[in-house]
Length: 483
Image (cartoon, rainbow, N blue to C red; front, side):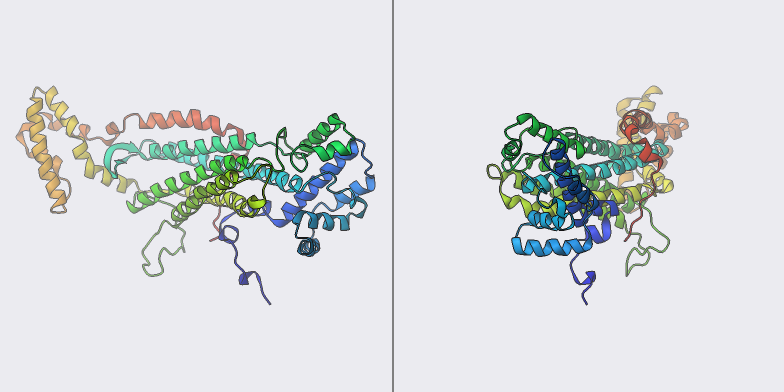
């Protein structure tokens, strides 16, 4: 007998995303949400005087959650009718017979499908946004802890002026705060489609209420309120504008690019052995090379982030391809791409939470890398100190130039350590400043205002952004990876 192992499953569902996000886009939640929409419509119509019985409403309430056996009924109906919404209208009517004649009264299919999708877009963002806030909070704690630890900066992939470990983490936080703002705005901009009829004119509802425009508007407002939205679009076609999908997708896709960007930095730092993601006691890095500690979490983050940032193209293409008031070529692609957007973003947040909860920093390795490059970076300080002692700036520059090239040759051609400092100490010209040499090479004097920048950033911008999520932060836990 065939089991679930005999059929393809998306890894987003079987491996990577959370139970709450998987349930949000599950068939049970989707079709139960349709039933809620039909109930809200019937209740509102009854409140406005239409002849709908109490029994009908009670039966609809009693069967809001679709049961397993009802899926089979709906599947048979859809096979016969080739229409998913009408299949579920009939399935719902079978368990709520008193309401069978008024379910979907005046509505079009998009009353169910589009309003449900808007609910899923909103509820999905409500799942994602607090998770993102938790990641920002974890990274903020890490940034503060390591705000004073000097490390090599890199520009063009080459060692550059020193930064600090905490300052680099603040760069990640700043990008994530942009994502937090984008997701908040996308959620807050969402409005309900409401009850608009077949082409958005509300003609069917105007007919039901015998030309009473006020009651049609009240109906729209009542259903919108029951669905938990503050307002509905005044203007729509048969569907809500697919531009809304573009808006939400772009915000999520942008977050995906941040995930890959951060993941790449972590992988590079792991390659330098300066920082590692968590590595469990029994974890295996390689099936062949037993010593390896591969950054598999960050690699997966890059992979899923890359997938996420490419999904907005589906929404862009679908929006631009729509015909007049509606064409059905938007349906199949949205069934795939919208859940994938949310499941991918959710999976990325699980990874970010897990990684940032267990960073391992290796200060001695970082210090060694700094010391390998610092003598070259300190040459300007040495020259300035010579001038203060009355030596010629040009003479000091020439002495440093010659010694620097000799030290560089020693490193590049002979694979030896950078011995510029020893060469300076052995050169009589620099005798007046030798007592200051150690102070001139203190790494903390090369990080500028990095520690102060981190402190200010975390205590102002980060703190203000996270204030609405204090409850979520208080109960935050480390996300576990299933695989």
